[in-house]
Length: 234
Image (cartoon, rainbow, N blue to C red; front, side):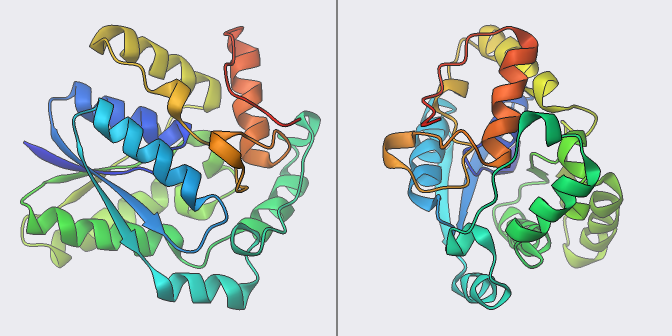
């Protein structure tokens, strides 16, 4: 059995890939380059994680998406990334404004479509992704509604009816981290410590500690009372 994992190197996609590994799939992990500031660290993390999972790793360049990010002035491209306090992580108005500043035009729609093509080419029936409940509250392309509609398209758009899988869709960030540690122990693997969540380009997998993605990572470990070995600048 074969599966594609859309792997940015972050916590969500790493744990989704662990679940695919646990399910017995022969994995191909994909990291997309759309001109994001954190690209080098995402590639470092994804390569390391893929190696541990005994998965093939591919980098797919999306130059046209990088150009769209410039046009839309996406913070992940320009580096103009907002900070957020832990207290505001559940403030819908605040996180909606943060989301708009880091929104990449049609990113998941484009990435999952390309992943579907690769999946069909290598006869893989499933694509694993990190769509989850916590981010679905803000990002419309992280919702089950989006995933269900996408799978309706692949029923007609691929001959082998490739299916997008979101094993984390009912989990928030601390539940995802907990699941990741449980799978590490079960499979005898260590990958979470190599994951990279930050929106910024920092040296040697260092996290800024102030962007929304870092703050959600920090909070998850704090809630679980698990030592966070992540190296934060702040």
